[in-house]
Length: 291
Length: 303
Image (tube, rainbow over all chains, first blue to last red; front, side, top):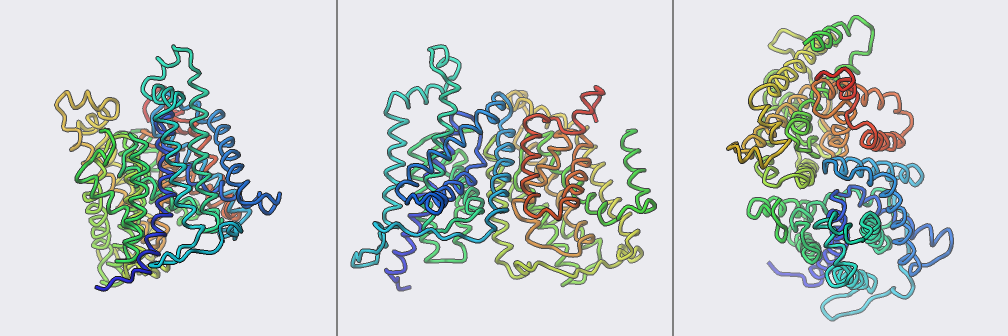
């Protein structure tokens, strides 16, 4: 079988971009799960809100992509913190499954409202002027915006890793994940940290939404199928480690890209099939702890 | 027991009351589905977010058997239910390997995998689904194209499944399941092989969900992708939550409440999704026991 390098590298790039979104989203899920002990089913809906936020900023206030990159994650993050303070907070101490059900309900509400006002079709969002065009790398043509998404996501992921694993704030966070009661006894405001953590996770999802707006268009349902794939990514990688989420996310994106080239029929199932294989061989996930 | 007799009598007189029988038949199929789901989550503590795959699989299998192979209704139901059982065995072996919260994510991902497979395989006819399915004659005697006959057949199927679940819950097996739900490590230390119990509960639940899917084919006369979609799995969860997790009659009540709600709100388009989401949120925040659960709590008895 002869390999068309041009097409292969194009699919690899698409895979890397999807991988960036998987990484950003599964990272947020892992951080939230660590502190709040819930699986945030609303993550896909909040990712979609990030993209819509960018759309409103551009068409309503005339603020361009660069503003959206900062404002959208903050705005959606604040929205998330309100959700945490008004609803999720009341679930502490209850079975995990209630958190999942509550956030599933929230996802339905958010998506339903957006679908009512914007239908199911996509709204276009233009690539910012500075990132238009492409580069010829010899073996392939690289659209600058796509390269930017991959590199920027990677940087954000690594910054998050640094924040959690290497700073004092991150140390508090990890300590509170292990034993919230003890950390509170040291005079640290754990409820506020939980709220901020949820805001951080949600902000990462919104950031992924902004990044994806020029590539995938802005659609009310853009997050629904994505979140299910991200769940599979989380099952494969395990939620125990931050770096694990990042690496698994990017790797699975690349695998998906390769599948699109070699066997396109399986491209939307390959992640799930991999999940099954991993569960059979290594039930605890590639990096996760047991349970 | 009184409640059961009351429910059976109420359901048996429906054809004489002028209530639209198709609505009740649809409700009965979903009620059986929700009961099957409740066996797993309410008594085993395992939240499956992929029960639509059993509904859809059994539906497709029965529809294909009836329409393409021209099998009789009873064989069609057996074939569809067996298909769901086989799927439950395969997915169960994978899903049971992870505890707690991962179980929901794994079942959701598995059902999405099944959805994509049905989207691509030719026998399901993709987006169109299998339509115009002949209802046939059950055992060669009962003509299922007669609404009243069909109604009693569906009711019999529902009661059969319901009693089987009721029996399971109150058997020694059911007691062990409850023990696992309450404290799995302790159940393990008492010498129970909890994985086997959970696997069996999962397969039983999937099979009965399949029975509901097979029966639904005779009511709706079609089998389509909506029955396999994750939003259907969400509706199953919602029905059980509204009625009451871990109650015997809760899922039945919940199924009828949700079906009725969809019927009345059909004109509101996408707002139905928003309202369903709101019901989820309200139930989880204020009403965790569900309708029957609250009643049971108020009267201090188990329903």
